[in-house]
Length: 545
Image (cartoon, rainbow, N blue to C red; front, side, top):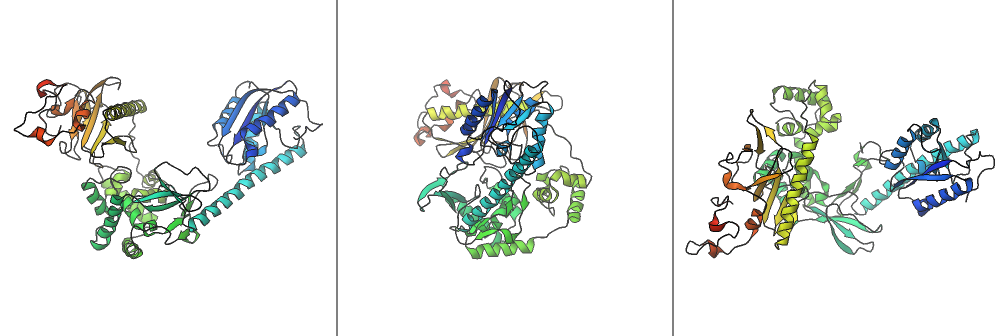
């Protein structure tokens, strides 16, 4: 244990707080070891520790993502601060900032208000001498250099693993899945969305996923190569069929392009297209810096098919200059009724909205370059949170009721759609209150254009989103896709939609229940519903309900 330098001034009787941080370094830097060393130093010097600030599992490269240090610096600025010292294990725990001056600046902020930062495990003293200052500067530089060297080694290791056929990214994409394998090659099973390996020596490979998704990817290549169908027409065709992408949303041309340009579908593993080291800005690397390993995955399409698609794509691709892109954008904003990234994607002879964002930093920067200022469309955050809370409560209540009744329920990733018994798809929605032509509050309803549920449930709440009013259950085909309908607060004003109105979510139990075909034979009596005698319940006239 480092001993105090005799020439250092006495600290007896002072109060202090301790700051500890651990990222993913070594056990010697665990927060418990840091606290033990700091406690021994405080006891030896006669210091009283009154508070603890701890950043567990946080990188020291930047201040961002370190709430404890940010809170400490905020408390230091209090007038007057309630403590005299900040005790830290060593300089690297204070931070591995890439700019040594940034590390010194945060320490200076403390010293400016009379709070001294002391590194308990360092050999230099805390007397502020020239030798101590020089040693701290060297230590800060060494801490930052350690992060740079470690980042380089990790990146090179990831590139080598990618060349061996191991997947280094997140979700591989539509039609593909991640498979977890042990260090000896034993397959452990697929990884679902959000799951990660728990053992460091395990590896992840990519394989074809759901059979339906694989077939759809192959069909996309067939449309593109064999039938000369472009990306936009393919996306429109899939949306017209009611086929959703991997996130349960509608397709757009950019997602189709990503499938047609993804070499992973031909069995090639590519890594390091982009890189972001030490929390710096994302940068795109030239192709000669990529790590490419052909033939390491089981392909979804053969190499000849991928090469044919790539040849067609290159012949159709036109690389526009910045001035040409801005010229087209200027003409678009002058003639278009609605200006947005979605409208840009839908317009003919226009680059995609993502292309503008990638070329100019964001779409708003491109707007500014052509002198266009988009109107501000603010949404009341309180109403938005209340709406989401109401939607979440409705979905949870319905899901729990269905599970209690013996049904098997699957929940979508966005938590707005459920699939009952693998067959019945139900989508939920809670609309914000809007006003139309001074007619009072109304609810706008539109059939989801990017999904095709069997039932669309619209929940109505009061103006404060506190009291449930009722809900509408629209079967498929009852609402025209792409057309807005409005429902008023007054009862009876929703005609011709009254037949779809129900008092609560219990109607979903009845719609999910199975019945024998014989029960609907004209020659057999229809069983009465126990909740609504003589079948006189709302919606009984609707065949869809």
